[in-house]
Image 1: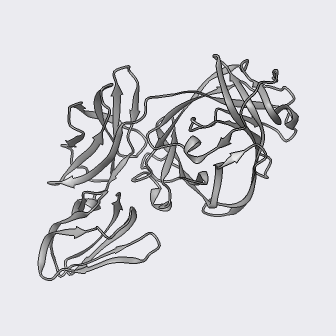
Image 2: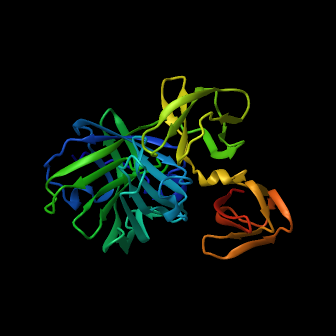
Image 3: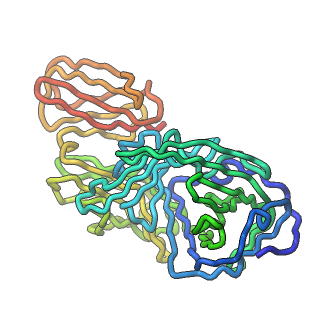
Length: 401
């Protein structure tokens, strides 16, 4: 699977070049296993041509979606996550990640097969596990150790990423990519393989993974294209007049036909129950006539004129939220707090993710609504607590500036 030498500039892979962005959706094709002997010498060196154009596809195609972690099942366990990954639009498995100038990282994952939307398994990676580290180039060497906790036991991974070669990559269906960097990766527990990346593509172009310790059986997954970018943002669900109230913003909608409103009681199986047409407005809203008596989850399915569809993040609404509404949330300069009852002499406290109190306000007398000034808060996730003689309320406050 090696070809003739071609001339490429030595690439320097940057965070802006490869980090995924919320709203992006990519297709990956899985291939048949193959037993071609592959060693480091097949991949290492300058100005290589890696010819994998004859890989044989199987029926499995993975759709990898990057969405906001806010409101997802298990997100409370990963407050530092700024991006989440799901496969095939199925939120029964969610990877919580971080993207920053040092690369793309995973900090945890959850699995839920329960119809009640309960978490069946959870893993936390401390400090975090690398997908890609940046900047990376030919000769870059990265290694670390990561503790993986599954709720009962802690195991250790020893991550290694080495830039072993650069050149031209050939994939099936005439896919040819220049200025590609090949990285060797090893987790220290028998897992190893090769990752091919290039600036301008926010996922690996090719993953070649060993299926045994002798490295003589392999399978691959390769980049098979990107869908239209997700145009929905700031999607939220709140209670208004004792009904679920959905609101979102959308831009660049000239190729969008409509928005389907989808509801789920388990955060896994979603059903369409309403539709909103595209308009000239950037802000959309929808009130659900249903009054759920248990936790409910919403998402927006965006329908393209070409027949393709993709999804917003998932917004969770709990029955407890019905007594205590924060809107807008996410907030910028202020947010409104309203209650389903009159509260007396309420004490409002806001804490950051480190537990530091950042707001402390005392409301004298009786009220059922209050406008909270949030100008002093930076973007992030906060815990808002209200204590009063007539009830105590807790909720998450999101600041997005």
